[in-house]
Image (cartoon, rainbow, N blue to C red; front, side):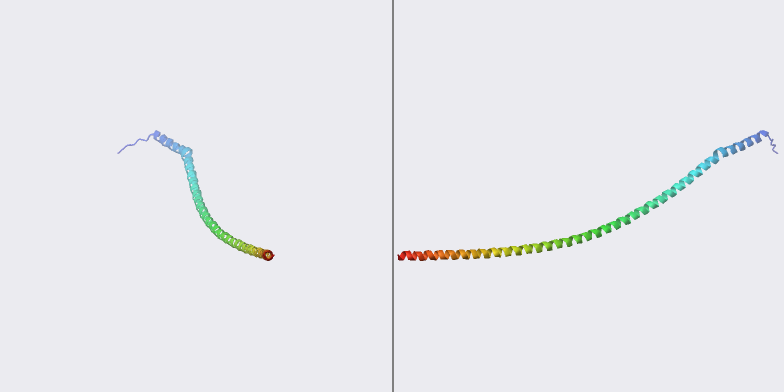
Length: 147
């Protein structure tokens, strides 16, 4: 049989080990575990916040794209409406200009007709005067040759 002798120093070393483990647990391991747990919680919170921020960013980008599409549609509609208004205004101006040009042309024709008629009357009067003078000269010549 094996004879084991029991020494009190083994009990002191075991007690010393247990006291050291308790002290290390209180001083080092528990604060370190609390610190690691709080950091883990902080990291999880930050990851959650990052996920929420990514989701909000995606929603914001989608909303921005929808808004950009709406603005583009409104711009196209406004462009079309302004183009139609411009064409209508152009037609209005052109028709007004054509009417004004026709009126001025008619006035010019009337003025020319009056000027032509006045010139004809003046020429008729001058022709009459010239014819009378010519007739007098011819008659006067005819009288001179008889004298």
